[in-house]
Amino acid sequence: MKPQAKKDAPLVLFTLLAQNAVGLFVTAGLLQVLASRLVSPQAAAWLAGGVQDQVRLVSLVLAGASMLASLFHLGSPYNAYRALANLRTSWLSREILCMLGFFAALGVAHVSYRKGLGPAALRSALDWAAGLWGLALVYSMARVYRLHTVPGWNRSTTPGQFFASTFLLGGLLAGGLLVAGLGQGQDWGPGLVRALLAAILVFLAVSLGLAWVSFPFRPAAVYGVRSPVAARDLAGVRLGLALWGWLLLAGLLLDAAGLAGRELIPLLLAGFGGGLVLAAEVVGRFLFYAARGEG
Amino acid sequence: MVQQYAFYFDSSACSGCKACQVACKDKHGLEVGRLWRRVYEVSGGGWQPAGPAWVTSAFAYNLSLACNHCERPICREVCPVGAISKRRDGIVLIDGQRCLGCGYCAWACPYGAPQYDEQHGRMTKCTFCVDEIDQGRSPACVAACPLRVLDFGERAELEARYGRVSSVFPLPPAADTRPALVITPHRDAERAAGGETPGGSAPLTGLPPGSYPPGISNREEV
Image (cartoon, rainbow over all chains, first blue to last red; front, side, top):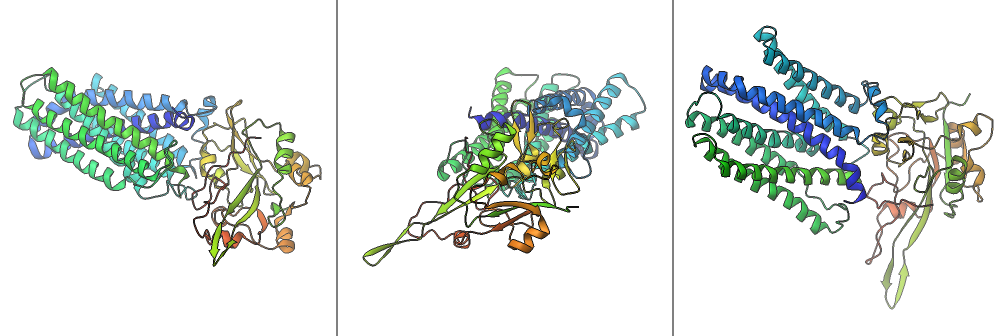
């Protein structure tokens, strides 16, 4: 790995893991709302049962891993406790505040649901708080890079890319947990589950579209790739991977939903498809950091 | 009482000898790769056919840049731990004990001033030799320049003496951070800004990190 890519790797991990955590939690939350309003209270209750517990736990693990990754970017991590000292002007301070807010709200919500602590309204409020902190986290992450002195990052496509990654990765993971949850609890019928998965796929289609329009196809000196044609090809590979992985995973999720219980091969292929999308997102994030030197 | 210390740089007479760069490294014990003052050569142009002959439009001039101790330092604005402060005399300093070493200030600064200290894991930059200034002496770079193209002092006095130019091609617009810098431009700076590179000439080389158009990194190893 080239030296600059090594330096950027902790930030690539930090941003993608955090966005994945937020995307997973918010997507699952939106599905919960859709299920209760458009499907049936029973469907919402089923989602609120085992699946949402897993969603909160996986989101917590991803957020925790993200914070750990960010420490490897710092030259003096022992000073990290000071990172909220400049909320007045620093978007980086605000980003850290939002990360802590998301993690804390999600952690308290998770414990409350698992142990049945407090009234249902309070637990629901904690979920909403975590969702809002999460969206604020992604927004503040984008603002960190909207430096007027760095034209390569100071574009409206920057928040577009970040939110696209959030819902692309989070949506796929939500779909995966939903399918994994099918083997547990009651079977609400393939029709209902297909409807929920279709909602996820629509969500993903919008995310992929957002990724397409917000990904800049500029020539870039990307880690030694100095040819504009090669740089465009690399960007094209990234989107191609995402599209291929998304289509593969989409078809397999829908197919898996129609099967009784779990089947190994569709799940493996779904994992492979998800892996392709993740690879595309990683490549895209490295490309983003490489764009710092551009005008 | 000085309101805003500033550097003056005469680009029209700088030979690019890098005595200022070396003097700074020597005084502060900077290792290879860490440059608190950086000398860039901005060059371009080429040859054009003119009938049976060829005429040159080549140009080259030098920029010696340290920290510009900006009136609106973006580094201070973005630092999450509040490690960067601006003194009453305008000098911008990094508190190494508070610094997180995140490098955000280096991203933000369009002049490449903050430099990472690998050994201690923190950001560092030109301090305007505050230890010398506070004793009434000159910064090391100013004292070392053999052609006397560097000077320092109260910004208003420098502007009265040398003019109010604080940005030349390819530096970013002065309105971005309002650098405390006065420059006498080289005679070719305007032509360089016009992008005059006729007849298949070499591209512009040796640009500072935040420069427009996108430059090529000029990490001089001294």
